[in-house]
Image 1 (cartoon, rainbow, N blue to C red):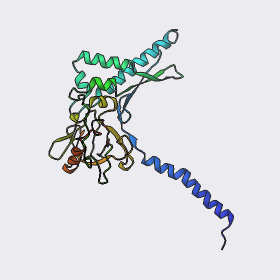
Image 2: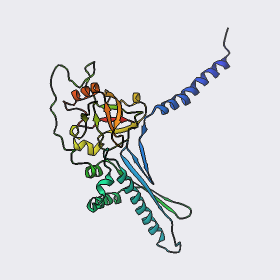
Image 3: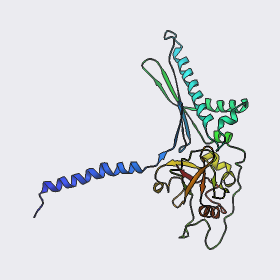
Image 4: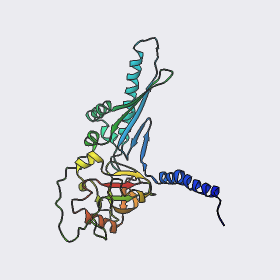
Length: 286
């Protein structure tokens, strides 16, 4: 029995619509999400390493010919204040925030204010009632990281590769690992600038001693993402990362992650070489 031409057209049209609309939607649902921290009128994007804040102001006297410039300046000043609030809230470790170091330290605080004042203005919005909204942005990396990171993160000299028939930092097929991915989903893990990995015996297997300050300053000690682990293999850890499942979190802020002794041994075996750890090619999925 022959199928009418119009039925075939409807069938192929339906398939085309499924490809156009359904497949991209599924792909978007599986796409990794940025880890965002909201503080008042400011946002810290842990994934991209960007701090954004807004400030607004309205004119009190529209007859003043200089009012617009004054309103703009006030809006910018409020944006800087909100930006500093985000910076102060940044968790350095399980026990300290940036604000903890700024407390009773005018020199430290003035330096942060200076950095905030130099933040890039990314938008200026003028509303119908003459209200001005200013959005500014600064990178978590670079100068800010260099200033706030603890001194125990030092510059690490290059490590000479170990020669042999097969590197210890490789998978079963002999391919060298390109980075580290820690799956901490479902553990309530929180982001910080200096996260630690412990084995089940409480030994640190990833921390300041394993990284070089130059890479931490420029890229962060670890990159945080939210999403499916199967989609993260090329998100900064290369195409053949070492995959580790977190067992639990540790500390008052749930920042540090405990992994199995078996995984820790595998990680420490890899860390004897040049390695991805020194270059902070580490992703934590939360």
